[in-house]
Image 1 (cartoon, one colour):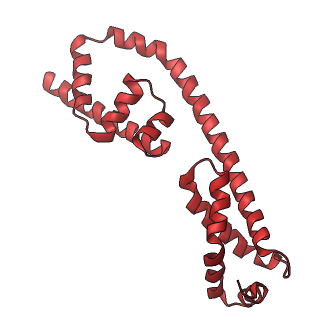
Image 2: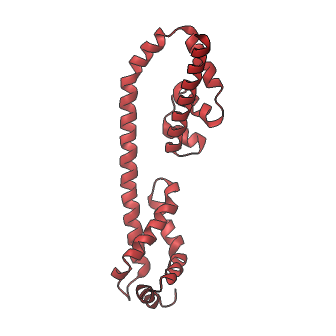
Image 3: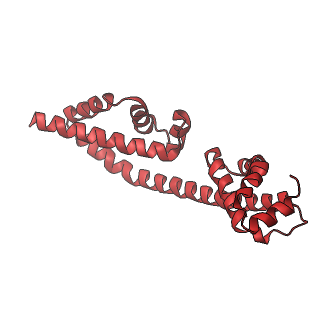
Length: 186
C-alpha cells in the first residue's frame, strides 16, 4: 500500500473514510491469521472485523516507519488466542455439565420410563414421528442414538447452539402433542 504512514496520519487527522482502504488491503491476511488459529471457522468473519475495530481504536499506538502488517497481525493473534481460550473453556464446561447432568438423570429417567403405561410410550413415539426435518433428526440422534450435541451439529451442518435450540423446541413440541393427546384421552 502506497505511503501507509501518510494514510494513517490522515486517518488520525480525521479522514475516517481512508480506513476502508486499510481494511481492503489487509483483510485477507488478517482473515488467514484468524482462520488458522480459531477452532470454529464460523467465528472468522466476526473476529476479523473485531481486529479492524481494535486496530482503528488503537491506531494512534502504531509507530510510523514500523511494519504495519506485523502490528496488525499481533492484534489478530491476540484476538484469536482470546477466542480460542473462550471457545475451549466454554466447550469444556458444556461437556462437563452435560456429562454430569446425564449421569445424574439416567437412573431416575430409567425408573420413570419403566413405570409409564405402555400407551403413554406409544403416544410419545407417535408425537416424535410427527416432527419434521432437523427437529426429528436431532431428537432421534440425541435420545435414541446417543449422539452428543457436537456430533449432531456436525451431522446436521449447523452450530452446537442451533442443535440445542432445535432440541429445546422439539421437546416443547412433543410435550404439547402429549398434552393434546391427554386432553382427548380424558
